[in-house]
Image 1 (cartoon, rainbow, N blue to C red):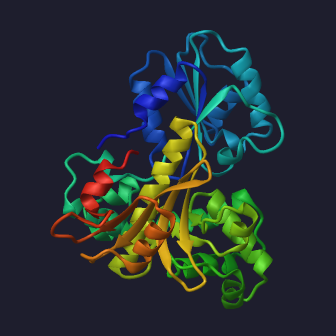
Image 2: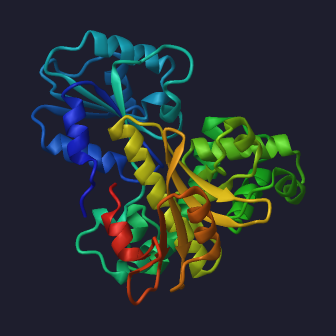
Image 3: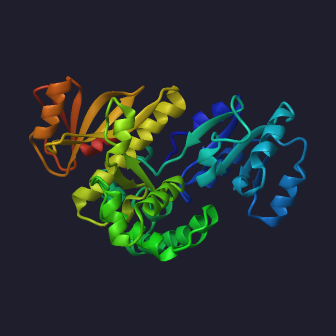
Length: 372
């Protein structure tokens, strides 16, 4: 198993400070420790540790430190001011890696600017391309257990389920309450539980609010928190008019595919969504272009699962099918109407082929070739 971003982070550390963000327990600390093993005079400090906290606030690491890893620093009051001063006055040999979830993902919003001082790297769950010699069984494991390292590598499915139960409980009782004060924790828990069975469907705030017995504005707040904590992500419909697109209903997906409640086809769609999100994140983080994941839908409910857009232009249409040898009618409709490249990715497919200009791919091969 090999994290694709490791050499890219090493390269960026030579030039600027690096922010490594992503879901809790996705492997950020492990990746940072891997870098430390390859670096002379490296130091790892976690702000949650009282002894480490004293070293951080006193800037008491050795002056010969080559790589400084600061974890959970966003819990420090005035952390952006601290980093700005640290970076601007650092000795020539010092490289700085800042890791964390949630608020680090919003470091560019408001307050002190760190522009020009840092590169962002988003670490997502394991992808097929990061797994040595992946097989059809690998794909099944990713669909059922998700791409977080611990459940993916667990000895049994039961161990993976136990991890997930503790993970979700910790997110709700610690991370969510730490992120923002929630007055009705039961309503937040119910919202999260309902989302698990609504993956891949346009999300109605009014309907969800009715089921949870709260206001649509409260649901919107809950969704924003769940997204900021890298628990869910929303895929909006594509529209050239961004304002009109934002008014339409997004589709929710989980970073952890193992969270999905539904049949295999739904878990496969979520796995495709996570893999494609990772791909568009890489286009932004390493290609320097604005990229996003969307879906397409008409008033007549013709729908294509995903559209990868770069600089607000859709480049590829992608349909995710569990079993299908023929091109989906909706995919063919959008492909012909907009003259866009189209791919149908099928979980169980005997033979890859062309359907006119539409490419029908086997899921394992498509995901193995999907960069990052």
